[in-house]
Image (cartoon, rainbow, N blue to C red; front, top):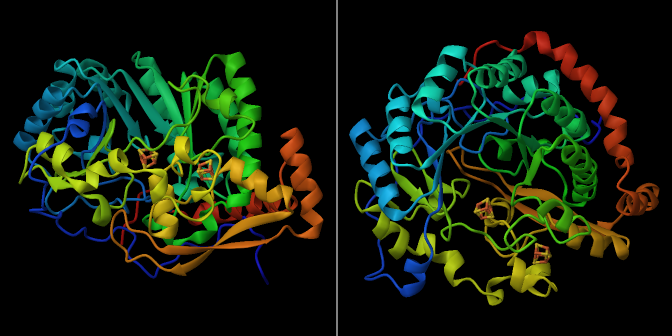
Length: 462
Ligand code: SF4
Ligand code: SF4
């Protein structure tokens, strides 16, 4: 029997869930000198993976987290990095993992960041964020914490691989609020989770969050093992309709909506969703221009989400943060990129110069190179006008290392006759979902609820 499109099949076991990560790349070449443009751009926002150790086993985890990396920075090296970030003018550091609080010295590092006057935030799965930890975080100087919630209880637990992870995340929101730390939430949209996003937001709104960040699952790490988790490009129609509906509710509740840079672009809701951004709409990728990604072993990337093997610019054990930022090609790519670097549909797009194909991470992990991005509202609407849509077909599987990816091909096809009119209505009204998405939703919930009793209560990483 074929499964409906958005039913989550059993977790594949052909790769270890949390493989032992390779040691970080070392002694990478840097340019002889920095240019004015390299000194113009500064890393204002840094996302720091403190450890790859994790107490969840998420099916969509891009870093395949679970075990610590074999070569994570020592406390002394981590504190040295805090000093270097301060000297570089970093304004905000978000601690992530794995799960940052599993590193024994995480509060010492957090305190050092806050002591420099850098805004200290964290993103957490909240599996073991007790009220005692929350109190210690308040004392350490955390300004805001974002808790990950990807759906209603059975969906979230199935995606996070641990029974009880939804209840724990909701409890961690309460614990953080109880000690006076402002709490936001972040949600990844998966194909099976799409129909629950609105209800999930409503629950989060009731829990008192001040902001909500939403992104889509892309095929990196463990998510690349399971293409069934991924939205098809044409489902951007549904995503944007959901976000339009949520945005109206969020405005009433005074909750800030923050669509991730992978949620694209330039459709009719762009100003509504991104009007508060400096340019009033999505601008091109900020990796290596304002954003900095740090892996737990000192590997430096322009954005934390970018694939490790393609975008590691250097290691703090070999070179200073300043030298890597200013003189590594892997961090310079967005400073040098022009429309000439785009390809496929994006190359001739009306918005090409402003957008530069949007999120580099999304393009690279689907297509193996940047410069063409089918997950774009403008593009989907243009195809819909012709009765066409794009679909992604897996070609090459991932290798099984943190932040790896497979390769997909883009297939352009006619909309199925039974969905074309509905897709056009959805584009016009922002109401509902596509036929196959709705059909699968009821079956999906039933399956998850039936399987919930078999889920482990602790993360299993073998
Ligand atoms: S088609 Fe490409 S360049 Fe045009 S708006 Fe979409 S992502 Fe940006
Ligand atoms: S790769 Fe994507 S997520 Fe990373 S900085 Fe660029 S736009 Fe943002």
